[in-house]
Amino acid sequence: MNTKEKYLAVERLHVPEWQTDQIQSANFDFVEYMRWLLMSDGRFNEIFKVERKEIEHLRLNQSSLRSLLNTPFLMVAPTLTTVEDWRCFVENTATTVAVDRLRDALPPVQGIELFAIRNQNQRFMTLASNLIHTSVLAAPLLGITPDVADYLGSLRGSQIRLALGRIAGLPLFRWRFTSTTFWYEFAADNLTDEAIAHQIMLTSPADLAKPQKAPGFAELRLDRWQKETFASAMMAHGLRASTASDVFTLNQSKMRARFYEIHGRSSTCGNQTRSLTWFVESAAQRLHATIYIWLYRKAIARGANAPEALIATHDIYARLFSSAPLISADRAYNLTSSIAADTRLTTAPCRSCSTPYIVSNSDVRVEMHHSFTCPACAQDLGPRRKRVRKSKDMTE
Picture 1 (tube, rainbow, N blue to C red):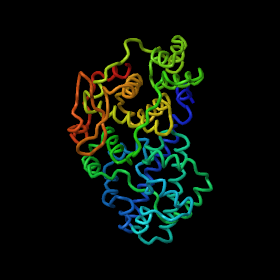
Picture 2: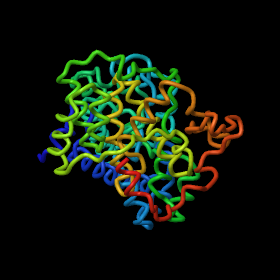
Picture 3: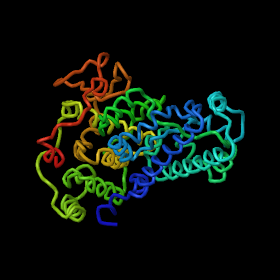
Picture 4: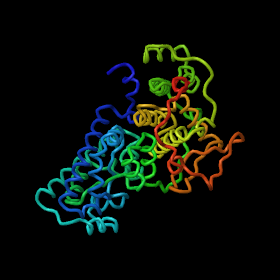
């Protein structure tokens, strides 16, 4: 483990490389498993929410498939979507309407098919349990709601094993990207990182609870060791030493020395990023800001405080847009603190797909919430042109 990885490896706020590799490997194996069952009986499409011809399309478009596999998100989502669905198997109570419908849609299975379903269910639950216990952002990574993640995380290993026995031959997961636009973009080879991010938000289960408001950095009562841990993690993600010292009220000289220890170079100087309209200047910038806030709020919903949510979000964001992230750690702090403190930036649902996106509500730029169309529905998420200011943006 190098110095940077050492400071990034904060418990529940960092998904290690080996775990990302496990997710990517599972994605490939789960897709092959679904394809195999669809070949044996086309009626599995009711369970998996995908047709065999669509699964076969994944093999034909290797470029788009690599883009999907490169994300830290699972390409499947659970077929059991509520706590009550899971509880009926854990506690052996009466099944829910959703479970009964799944059973009615399931073709007869026996022999090698039953073995395969049980085996893949076990693998899915092992992966899900590991993520829930190691990442505060397990819910969006798995395509579940925070309350389901909390419930599954509260179960003992023996309870999960008994539940899997009662689930028997009922497949525990399905294809995640159920919107029709996904397959259009995939087939057209237009599946950019931004398009994938939009599909993740679009097809994730909606949170019925109102977004929680976490105490700001200044309102938290943190011990010095906690401040230094959070500051070091954010500097490992690229936060300037001066910003870290201001945010966490730490000695600036010490933070500059820590930044040099992590990166082997001095922290950049200059004015901090303050512009809020920057986040809505282009379709790509709006999308990046939106997925950032979406992940940030998911972390808050799992009980993270403001710095924990910021660190965990930047960790996943950097992996999702590993080729060309637009939001630096300093811009991220400006975004999350501003949207929590005032209304100059807010979220509004797209009038076409209903996905909430960042919109401007400042005296500089006011956007009409009732008539807003997101970048995906406006077909503005194609391949990005070369950015002349890229190096400058990422150092701000």
